[in-house]
Length: 111
Image 1 (spheres, rainbow, N blue to C red):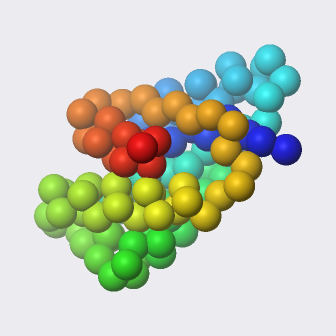
Image 2 (cartoon, helix red, strand yellow):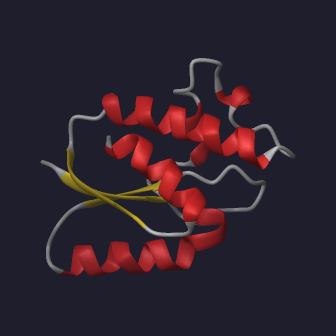
Image 3 (tube, one colour):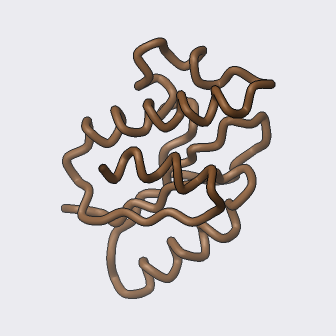
C-alpha cells in the first residue's frame, strides 16, 4: 500500500510535521514521517530517523551528520534523501514543511 510521506527537519519542525501527519491520517491515509534533521537535537518520534536517511549518502552517514558546517550537512542530507527516495516503492505522495533549508532538502527527493 502506498503512503503519504511527510519529510522535514524534525529537530526544529517536529510539532508542525506531526500535525500534518495527523491531518493526513485523519482522512484514512497511511503516512511515513521522515526526519531530515542534521543537528544534534532529538527529532521526537518518527518513522524514519535522520541517521537512516544519512546512510544513503554515497559517502555514508558521516558525510551527512557533520556537526558544525550546516551548509555542507544540508547539501549532503539532500543528496542522501534523493537516494533514499529511490529505494522506496510505497510513496504515493510527499509533503514537506519548513523554511528554505527544508525546501532544499525535500525538493531534492521530490525531483
